[in-house]
Length: 298
Image (tube, rainbow, N blue to C red; front, side, top):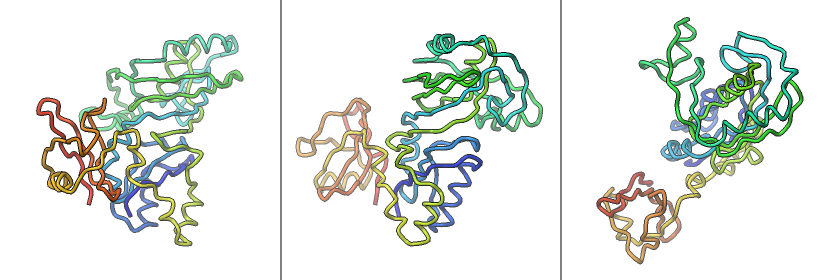
């Protein structure tokens, strides 16, 4: 079975444990998730099966959106509620207007320093391993992209926000930095991933629903096609001769019979056979003016 399950990960479970559960239930050896959620977070976790694992990299690059509760006045070493409190202040002087004003500086292209307790590597080891060993590591800031950032609700000391962001954005760091900006400190109280690319939490499958689907033998109906994750890419239907070139991994020129011949803005497209089967993912090489098969599917 090749495809993607849109699973609603509950709090208290690691993303890895969800993958292990799907492996056990399905008997499929090739299973992987597209974008880790912290154990305390919940929401959309796309789990890819079979040849679906080959498009994980593209799914991880898609935009994601979250709903986050940020508790003002409480700072922790992990930037969230699971950590040890390092500072407490009285945030009663922070108004909704002050929060709205502070959020302005976090929209668009920003710089973030990853949390000390994160999987970002330093000298080949995740930062959380250094932190647990009591070793302070000087981490560099990283660029992040915030497409949308809105204050949904404010009931002091908790601000509820919705964020739409690009790959590699840490909502924990956003919560921490917001607290620093306001001068009272803050940490992430709860986090729900609402979207991951085309996958929506409203269409996701809970673990009890997934287990029931395996028990009663209809779980295959819940598996989305591989190209669901790439629906924003341009698509091309190729003839038999072009299809053979793609299967062989040969560079090719798309002619008028394989419209569109012009490369899309992101220089990638999906290629289908005349009977609608996904045959490959192509990347345009502007120097050679040729399309190179990047992934080929059986």
